Image (tube, rainbow, N blue to C red):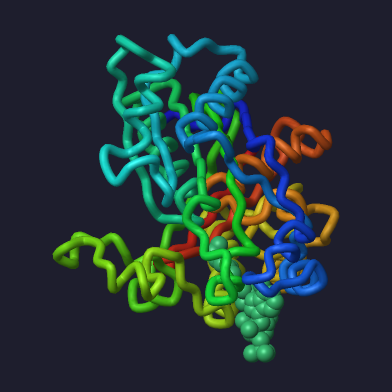
Length: 334
Ligand code: UT7
């Protein structure tokens, strides 16, 4: 069976920069630059403005990824779109992206949830589709628009300061003969913790799906038990990284670059230290992006490329953890 590889990456961040100082200036939020930096490493994030949507951002990131692969949209045969913040409840953003980029070419579009792990779940699907010969070139996109759904009062400050908007995309295609490409993936979930980090309302489990009561209680904002999420994130990210290395029969010392999900700089520093990955082998973008959920890993990939840190055949470890709980890891040769 042929191997699949990531051929290229692209990213897009909205223009509006929101610094910790800007958040500090919102009196009802009751936060500070010092608290945010100390607890998360974040200094700024981007927010959409003027009605910009996830699909709008996906268009930019996808065009860049396809161009960087030396391909045209005509070469793309399938879309995989990961987001927890689709433009509308349904259909998913994949269809809107198909319209924007492919028009009359009615290629398939699959929407992936899986929150912070969505990009790696999508990558595992793309890998399988290419290995089995179903498609040759797949556009895998992760976008997130958090800023339109955050609670800018003290009640939501733990979550609100962490998140930002953004988009990342990669093109996945066949690896040349002898290139290991995507070597192994491991995907996990543990639904008993689903309510530790979730957005409850609107919900089809309720009738009506949204009520004045739910709005008054702020149940349309994300809720997080930060300490529980933090603890599980560190444990599971270490565990799944070891799992994927074992599957590929590789050692941690062989990893050239670690591109972790960007939820909190402190989580990633702890994970890297438990894995014995030196910090110079880890890429961080959270300082200027915040947590862009399904978009963090492709954005990190773009940053690694920009810094000249990704070389042909380098072993790259991707690891993510988030709401669900879900967590996942992929080991690949660049
Ligand atoms: O991508 C999905 C996964 N998400 C994550 O991985 C996030 C995981 N969790 C975390 O990153 C951390 O738990 C946080 C950064 C969210 C919070 O850090 P923490 O060190 O766990 O703080 P805490 O929740 O224990 O809160 C400590 C204090 C509390 O005040 P008291 O009770 O000690 O007086 C909070 O009310 O910090 C307060 N606090 C804030 N203060 C200023 C919480 N949020 C804020 C804020 N600004 N934004």
